[in-house]
Length: 112
Length: 113
Image (cartoon, rainbow over all chains, first blue to last red; front, side, top):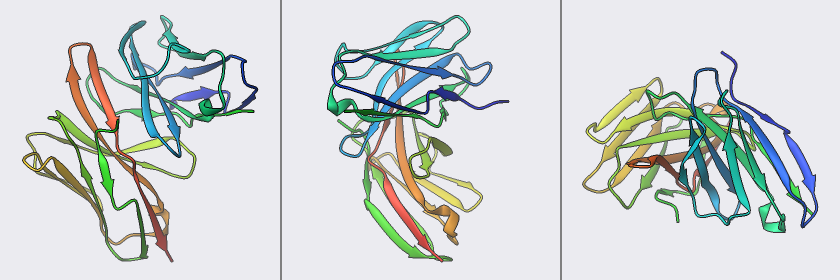
C-alpha cells in the first residue's frame, strides 16, 4: 500500500496570509490526525478526524481548522498566519483496529 | 503540556554500544508507543506496549513499562550508525471523544561509526 502523502512538502507564506495543507491517508485508514512540530514546543496534537467528524482537538486557537472528506483525505487550514506558525506539520493515519499511527513526511511551513 | 518527558534529551554513543532512553508520564494510559524520526522527516512507529504488559521485544529493541512508576524505557542493542535519529515516546489515552496520543519531547541519539 502507498504510505501517507502530504502536499505540499514545503511552503513559504507571509504573516496574515492563510494556508491549506493536504493529507492523503493510507488506503482503508479512516482516522487522520494532525500534529505541529517545532523546536520549542515539540510535537503537539492539533486534531483528529474519523469518518468526516472531528473527534479530538488540541489546544490551538481557532485559526487552526481542519476537515475530512468522504474518501478520508484531510485538509488543515491556518488563517491569519503568524511567525510562530512556522513548523513542520505532520499528518498521520491509522486503521480502526490499532493505535499505531502512520505518519506522512510532513509539510514544512515557513512564515515570513 | 506534554504527557511524556524523555530522558536524556540527547545521547551520543559508539557503534555497537547499547542506547537506553527513558520516558515518564503523568496520567493513566492505555498503551505507550515509541517512534523514530530521522532529521526533519515523518515519524516511524517502532513498538507499542499495552498497559498490562511489562516488557516487549522487537528485533534489537526492548521496551519496558512500569505503570506504578509511570515510566517506560527503550533499549536499542548493538547500535548502528543508521540508528541515528530522534526517538519519541507517545502515550495513548482512550477518551469518549476518541483516542488521544500525546508525544514526549524526544531523545536525540547520535551513533558514531
